[in-house]
Length: 439
Ligand code: GLC
Image 1 (spheres, rainbow, N blue to C red):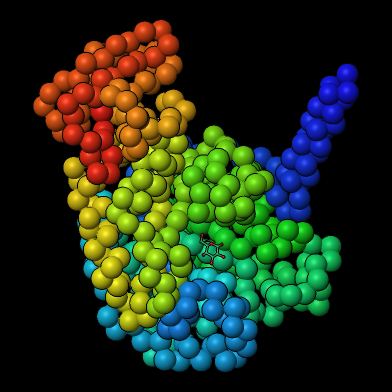
Image 2 (tube, rainbow, N blue to C red):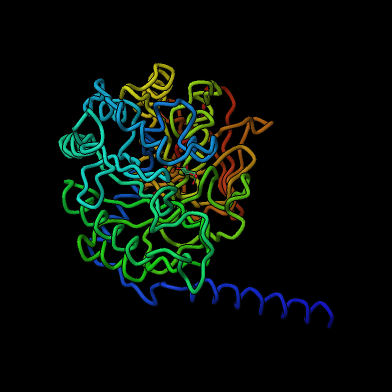
């Protein structure tokens, strides 16, 4: 009886919290995605692997994108970085070529980060790369054109948080959904202007990746105006928001920061339930998002492949970040790792691109992806015996082989699942992939 009561209380709290979350200020009440949007979602899920890029005037200090905040650099001093930002070696072709060589299908790049500097030409503020730096060029336009030419999809990261603008009023108390003593409406208007520019001026933009909501949980973000505005400008654009919550009405994909879906290793995702939307994990190649000259904790090729495969098995994309140097070049360690990952993808991409995950729950030895009449068992760690057992598979299996191999493997299918016998096969350094053909 006591347990029942407790359960009912728990249920009530959950429902009330979920309701409160949905009824927070400025949220949409309903949203029906268009056919174009649904098609974008499918394409997004098919792509599986993307390049995240954090690049801004902060890159000059080589200490990550939070440097202004962390070193408490006053805004007027920080702004000086713009006056000598001249990334002469930036080459959109080289960046897109690297993404392609890595087997990545899309790029998500910071258009404006928390420091408030716009890395694109905007009419909404002169604090942008064309008007405030000696470079005077718009790298995002060059990137957009190159992506379009090369068939790489482009998404823009956009920070809701701004450490410098007086109308954002960083640090002010929030009263009735707005910062005290500030023109919050002006900030919302500013964001709408910029988002309109990003979607209408740049060819081929397919996604907006919001970040920074978590800085203000009680403010009215006016998502009920911002999301419809984006979808009105182009309903195929996918909206995601790194608020670490269960997706809000109007969003088209769900992201997990530094975690696989359902994981909460970083403590960011405690309040986030896995939704039915397309999923994406983001992680960075070392421990920094923006260029960091002392961060040498580079992830290995094996770690990256492991992450990507684990994501695919959980039906998620993997968005892997690099922070280019202030001159616009990408450091050789990143190029080297990405090229090696790309070589692996070239050989094994059949078992990743266009697949869907969550075929079975992740197993001790790895995960399973599926596409058309094939299932791919990715053996990422030794099963500890010379067979694997794939539980609950109902499809009739007609043949089992090692991907890219010529010999067929023995298997036994019973109502509980399938045994695949691995005797005699060489385990792969990264991922031994067994292909099961169904009829
Ligand atoms: C966090 C960081 C931000 C970074 C983002 C990428 O939100 O605050 O700097 O851009 O993660 O996921």
